[in-house]
Amino acid sequence: MQDKRQYPRYVVEGVEGTLMFTTHVDILNISINGVALKANRRLEIGREYILRLEYKDRTVSVNGVVVWSVLSELTDGPHAEKVPVYKAGMRFTDIISDKMARLLEFIESHKLSQDERLNIRFTIKAPDKAILDGPHNYGVKNMSISGMRIETDMRVDVGARYPMEISLEDNRTIKVLGRVVSCLEVNDRAPKHYAVGIEFIEMSDEDKKKLKEFVDAL
Image (cartoon, rainbow, N blue to C red):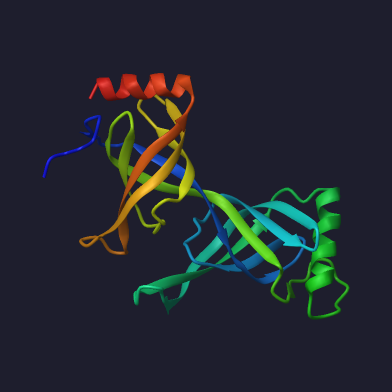
């Protein structure tokens, strides 16, 4: 079959990056110090994420570092496949006075017990919305000035758009908005990995220059 790409792609080695994802999570319990939650993807221990708790007309956004993360169960996915579900614990890192007040208000409006101690973990009713923002690592397999193929253990939806960062040689990085054009399971990898085709749709002029210099050198 004829390759219809406008620009040739070149195999690369040692190039990695991160994409910023957003996912809904279930809060298991929470205090002013941290939270336990359930997510549909693995959270990396030691990495920082942003948890956004939306309720009524308010939003509380707090940063937290993952201190533990385990595979909890496998559930049935939309295509009859088994989908992993993870549990994780996060320690909040930026609870200053104004955020603490909003977080306490959120806990008070959702908690199931009436204990007055501030550092206790409360089991809460499902909030209106709990959203986690954070980075996910990937490896780059081939690249052109218009896109790339990456490999990651996170399943992504075709058509989804992600802010992405690519780490090139000599400590150079480029930032790009990428659109998923394909996502295929890699059969010889365990746990599951996916080969993902990415189209570059937005990039600064400076980063375009860095990318062209890198590709031209391949």
